[in-house]
Image 1 (tube, rainbow, N blue to C red):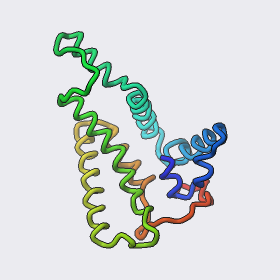
Image 2: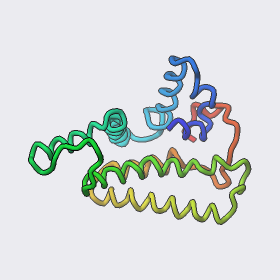
Image 3: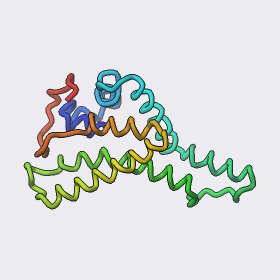
Length: 182
């Protein structure tokens, strides 16, 4: 989210990586509000879905809570031994793949920002990036087709907050767009 804010010129690299903890946290909260919060242009229902997704994602990243609960439940039902390592079952792999798409797609949309100038990586790279972008969209649409609200909402998020103009490339963000919905 913060790199997306930087790419939309909502912040500066210095502000979003401030050494002073309080300054950095305030800037992160401000940028988050502009990207996915009350000032993002996203409707309240979509913001609620994204808040829930973020909480689940946070719990998994900081302690593997969801994975552990799944493992514990399978163990308690006598379905398999308790394991501290990854298990390869359809549910776990599916959850992993869905989260990988939800991390990878916005990141992929930011890759043109690595170009020092418009078209620096060439037309073949742009075509491959387009195929990759389309594959992420198909994955999220499949999730949405299973009536998983996050699939639809995440597609909206990427299409609105991780959408950049043709020819997008690196620029030194000065934060001058910090109140817009660019």
